[in-house]
Length: 118
Image 1 (tube, rainbow, N blue to C red):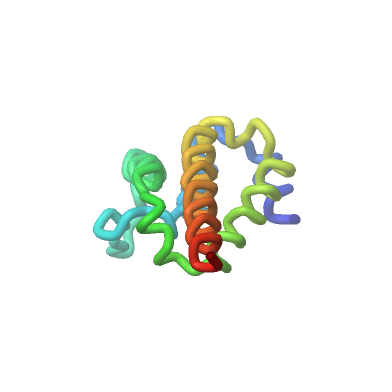
Image 2 (image 1 turned 60 degrees about the vertical axis):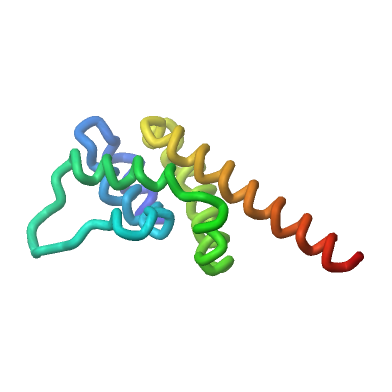
């Protein structure tokens, strides 16, 4: 919570939260799209591209991500929204898309579970 409070005071006018949001969503970036670190800083455009590419994950790819990581993302997202509020408004489309894909994958798992019980 202390780190998020610090980020809340910092704001995001110059992209200060870009790397933090990248760290939040990097699990959901489709394979082959991740950043390779060569010791230099990632450019803002590259970070934003990577963050945006997390919107391209499918529910099929999501099944390969452990449920604990998915749940951890949801818990962190809840804390980020509570602490940073409008500071992350630029990332709402990304977060909303990830929430939709997570919901879709959960529904598919539930339907499969029901069919397996029949």
